[in-house]
Structure formats: structure tokens, C-alpha cells
Length: 201
Ligand SMILES: C[S@@+](CC[C@H](N)C(=O)[O-])C[C@H]1O[C@@H](n2cnc3c(N)ncnc32)[C@H](O)[C@@H]1O
Image 1: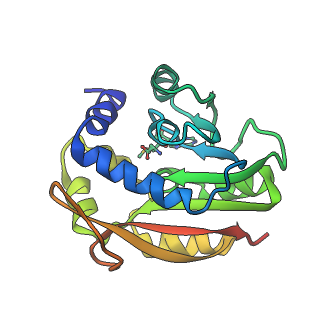
Image 2: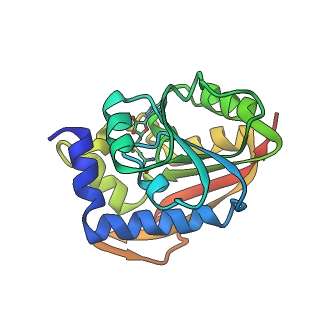
């Protein structure tokens, strides 16, 4: 099964839908109605699907993901790399990374690019998978799981790297176990951690 097929299959399950709905609701706390939003590593466009009323652009470096997203959502979807964004300087109000930074080797360059394209009042929203959680650990072990492509597997070190470039705080949310999604802000059970803020540089 291709990555796109497995992303689509996941997105069609109630479990996957619940997770993505909760992520989208979480991100909406940090965006204003008229924000210009850039979603880096948009995959098949799951966030764009949940943001029809926003000015959102999706970007991904995978041609297959870009093709799939274009077929699924009305939002513009761009082929490009997080470390060299084909986006004008100071043209974006909110830049979003959902389960993307942990798959990018050069995070400093990605966040430097995020800083470049943001307006002076702009916000960076990062959601990363918490490798201390059972959900992420079990997926890291699972043969064929996309999680096995994860480059940054030490969530604490990753958070420190992000906090070096974003003036914000780490927050844990969304407990996930087997096929259940529940409230959790515990660093050992929450499957996702967020850092939201303005660039430090
Ligand atoms: C785990 S998926 C997350 C997809 C989507 N954000 C979601 O939550 O459903 C990671 C995505 O990041 C993309 N990606 C990885 N490295 C990238 C890079 N350097 N620039 C842009 N996209 C990248 C992958 O192609 C993939 O679609």
C-alpha cells in the first residue's frame, strides 16, 4: 500500500477522523478568521479539508501527496520543501506544522524558513508526535508504519530544538490508546505535543 493510500485509509476511519478533528480544533484556537495560513507537510490535505472557511495553502514535498490533496480539497496545494519554501517573505500570518517537523532532518532550516515567510506578528503552530506515548511507540515498532520514517525520535530533544526558535511553551494533549482517543495532558500518555508562539529570531 502506498503512503497516500494508507493516509486515505486512516482518514476514513472513525479513529483517524477523531484524531484529525481534534488536531484541527486545537489549531483553530490560534488562528484568526482572516489569517493567511500556510500548512507545511500537508499530506493528503486533511487539515485543509477541515479549514474550508480559512485562507489556507497546503505545501508538501511529496508529489504523490500533493496530487492526492489537490484531488480532495479546494485549497491551493503547492509542491515544495519546508527548508526552501517557494513562498514570499512576510506573506503568511500563521504557519502550521502537523506531524511534520519530526520527519524533517534539518529542522533549524525549516523553522528559519517559517520565520522568513511570516509577518512580524505571525505565529508558528507546531504539533509533533510524542515518542514517550504508547501510541507512538507501538506505531514506531509496527512493520510498514509511516511512523518508521520519523527522523527525530527523542521528543524532549526535539522540543528543545523547536523552543530555541519559537518563543512559546510546550503543551501535551490528546491521549490515544489502541482505537480510543481521550483527554490527556500527561507527558507519558498524550500522543501529541504542541509548541505555539512567535519566532525568537
Ligand atoms: C506524517 S505526515 C503528516 C501529514 C499531515 N500534516 C497530517 O497531519 O495528516 C508528514 C508529511 O510531511 C511531508 N514532508 C516531510 N518532509 C518534508 C519537507 N522537507 N518539506 C515538505 N513536506 C515534507 C511528507 O511528505 C508528509 O506528507
